[in-house]
Image (cartoon, rainbow, N blue to C red; front, side, top):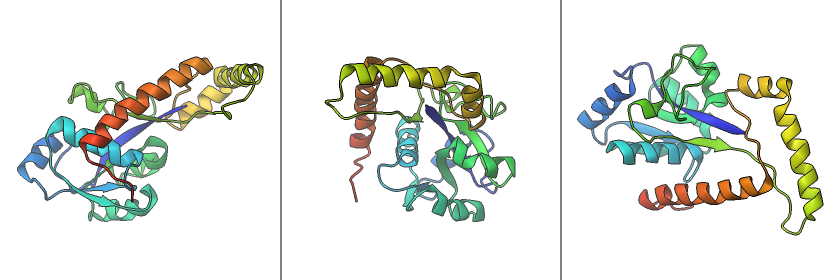
Length: 201
């Protein structure tokens, strides 16, 4: 299952679009606080990818999870954060935070009026994912059976509707497809981690 992210700003930030925010950040280098859920977390690397691709300079403020950062976002101590759509959608719907863009390449049905960041920052595309793995020496017939059953669940209309309601999307395929995806995703984000010099705590 893939879960998209969303770029959020406090309503006091004078930017209603991604281009306006980029302009605001470039006019105020080192003065905008960007929250992180901790070094190397998904919100952190989404923000670092944004900084790299837009040439913006923001102050990174680490929290121990996205939840603890939310009160400071709402109060205005933090101006921008990247969070998962399922985690942030209630604050967006309540009008407490302003969404500027979703992190996936395409817009989301759950936030239809929010553009993709990639519409303004060509090539920006980021999503978190969840999968099921088994120990390395699990017999192939068991892996195949698990894969078949999981794909059947992901194809079920009720399951798909529930996943979509959370702002996520099913990610089905073979065990080999998943292994290839993991390798490619590891290499892709490894480049961002090295470029941003992210170190474990």
